[in-house]
Image (cartoon, rainbow, N blue to C red; front, top):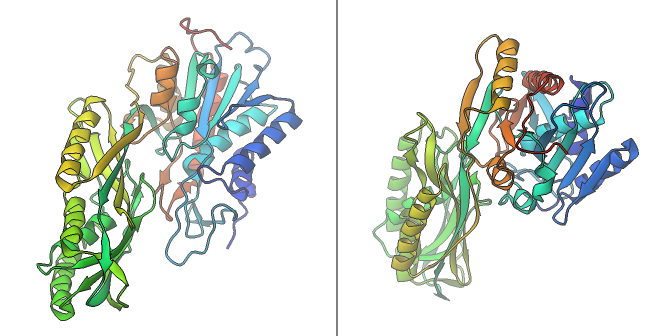
Length: 487
């Protein structure tokens, strides 16, 4: 049932989030939402502009009495990850997000909710459009294409960041202040292979029901990768086989929940026995981490074309040898992942297998080291490797004046010290800091769980908590930062 989230408190935030949910806005399809925000800003009399890629900046003068306070930028992104569960007919380019409430959490109807980062954008917009909130001079910066490679942040004009302080609203743990994040680099590995006439019995092998999730935040939780699990099943058979199709995952920054292949064998009964044995072992090994795992082996019509057995084995061997998961924990920050890589999408096309991964690291040199491993695998498999969409990590600044003030505010609000954390995910702060090295930055946000999956949800009360913290920060007197000029 569709919930009326406009009745939730704080009303200003939830009304904006309701508007955001009502307008389709997956990555690369943010225009309608962008135009809606700009129209509202014009009606409100705010100074508003957009750049060539679609980023938005709204400028609002200070409240009376805070005219000489240091300016603050509130920053969020307005695109969302489009993921839907089994059986959903939702179209992210045309359909609104339908929501419902369960035990204090807001969910969507078997799709991603877009709380990442619609809630952050809603909080920033609620401040911009309010008439009764004390605040210093404000820049509201809303970026696009964050979820598909940080395209908006990479194209952002550094002049937009000419402020002493910036608060990023794209974090997902209430009570925590984030002061650092991983950088990233996209990986595309193409393994050429040729099709020929298929002969024999065909079977469809499907792995599904996995939890999925965020390829950075959830990378250390032991969750399965459906593409790799499928490849491991096929690799477990000693029989020659011809691969006719393979498809798994959808986006480079999402843990794949399902994958399917059609394979052709000369001896179907022997194949079935080997695959069933491998599937039983896999289900037993993953029983604790993936309670919904399903492995299906079903007869299929023999396709006209399939790869020859040698090419079939080569592309599967490439998959199972692809680096994946946590590669190294941080030496400087206990319990924090330093470097990881996640295979997000695989597809067998007419020219061979295409694999798309995302590597992440707090430092730059580990990304280069992972790239060298991938280049070696490409040479061994006869493939071609492309590395692109690189963006830097955000290095922590424990001496941050904004951090110190935020710690005071959170301590008073929660009655305990704030958690200071570093995120193994790509906040835009890494890119923004490279463009504005003297701007002091922090990030915080409400409790969001299962981001990038159809089970994404946001804790309703934590939104109100973050709202009060944001208002307290904006209404307090931040110290002057003389390294930049307030705009």
